[in-house]
Amino acid sequence: MASTTSKAPPKVRPKHLNLFQISQPLPAVMSIMHRMSGAALFLFLPVLLWLLDRSLDTEVGYDLVKGIFSLVIVKVVMAGLLWGFMHHFCAGIRYLFLDLHMGVALAPARKSALAVYLVSIPMTLVAIWLLLA
Amino acid sequence: MSNRIVVGAHYGMRDWLGQRVTAVLMALYAVLLVLVLFIKKPVDYLAWHGVFSPVWMKIATLVFLACLMYHAWVGMRDIWMDYVKPTGVRLVLQVGTLVYLVACGLWALKIFV
Image (tube, rainbow over all chains, first blue to last red; front, side):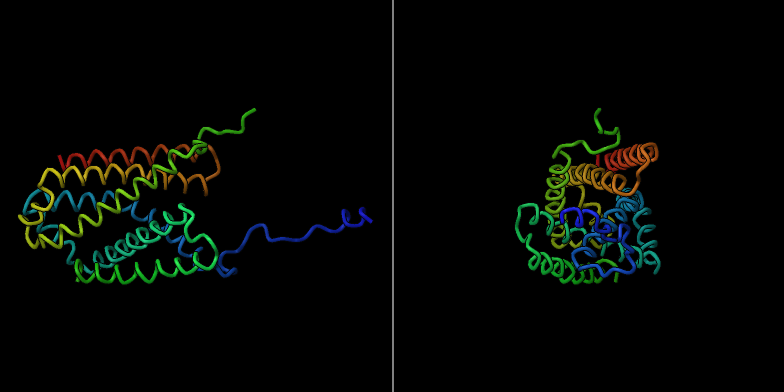
């Protein structure tokens, strides 16, 4: 009888999951956004350094940066980067707690993933209001 | 035969720990910067320049930026290791990332020294 189990056809399992078909749990969405926001901040690093350099260098440079920040497209990109930073910041703190083995069970992990959004999005809105509005 | 490859992980926890330590230091700096901005409320060039002119603020900012470069290196290397499989391509991307981050770090040094 043991031979029948070994001859059973192999289970067909999806080896390559279609990310557009499967429903991702919230911690997974939060996780990939943590990675994407990190990569975005990495890519914009020279832009941010240039703006910081110009704005601190001379008064002319400061006015130039102020002018750049008055453009709507710049405000939109900066708002996106602020969200990226806030998400990366909050999700990162969540990971630090997970690394300390705090909140690793499924239920608290899902709650804390939701908390990342509930904290980071209002923080982003306040930052946009204070810095870009 | 070792299955270790030249662009693999360093098979240790140094970078893993380093990424977390730098994360905590950067989070503390972010809180510090927000507090300083709330206290000084810089609305013109002189006040904005004044935010970064104290020596302690320059040091804190440079420590933050040094942490950022190391933190971003570990994170970007994780991304390359996860998604880019050919060794040669991965090596080019990793070297490119290092050059990019070192250049950014030197630029930051120029701004705050």
